[in-house]
Each structure stands twice: as structure tokens, then as C-alpha cells.
Length: 117
Image (tube, rainbow, N blue to C red; front, side, top):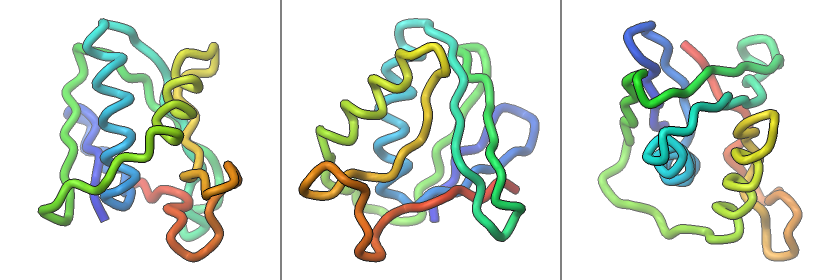
């Protein structure tokens, strides 16, 4: 599991490396344009099965820590979905990677909820 470390708050948000790579691309594009926004996701049931959000701004340090050494292949459709979400009034809403027919994958490789520590 990779981690997104948020500022100096000590908050660590865990995602698998494939998910984290896609999020990094979308978040970096927004912050490069100096666009601030909320990033929201569904929490893992182990920590209450709720929902979490953080405010992302270019002034807040982010650190992406990947567990593996290889960069995964990029799913352009997923990037488009995440990017469109990030441009909406609610900010970036994490969604699972779409499968071949556009529906979320259900074969066990779906990233699923995030864990916040």
C-alpha cells in the first residue's frame, strides 16, 4: 500500500500504488495550475466506513510514498473520470477504476476505500 502524506499534520492516507499513481497525476495537474480543491474518499470499514475529505492547496506539502518500485500502466479513462470530478464544485471525489465496460471493477483488483492513519 502506498501513502499520501498530508502536510505537517501527520495524516497518512493509504491507497494501493496503482490508485495513488492516478491520484498523483490528477492532483499534480490541479496544483500546478494553482487550483485549490477538496479531495474526498470513502473510508475503509476497518476505520468506521465513513467519508473523509482534505483541502488541497499548492502551499500544503504533499508526499506520495509508493510501496513498489515500478510505475503502473495508466488508465486514461480513469484519469478523465477523476479529472472531471476534480473540476466540479465538490472537488476530487475518489472513484474506483472503471472496468472494460465503464463499470467499477469487481474482480478483486478494485482499490476500494482508503485507510487514514
